[in-house]
Image (cartoon, rainbow, N blue to C red):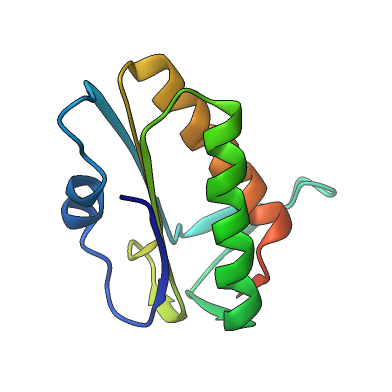
Length: 131
């Protein structure tokens, strides 16, 4: 079963991963994206320290875009189920901001789909991060 959600509560990584597992699959790949202390600016190369993160979203559009991503990824890769949960609000360093879990019959497709999903989510879903 596919799902995509926004929450202001801490995300339980294991429960997200287990929600996508059907009996016909042999692999689940789960990404745990979390707030890190140091960030390197891509343009200048400068490293800056982060105290905390705040995530905001245009929620109706974010859910709509996540739904589209799930439809697209299932057309691109041989996978069974996808789960995406993104946290909103203030996150301390080390707290999980996003979990993406992909179940597939074979691991290669699950890894590729998970990588594709995080890249596309950052590009297309209206969720904004403030450091």
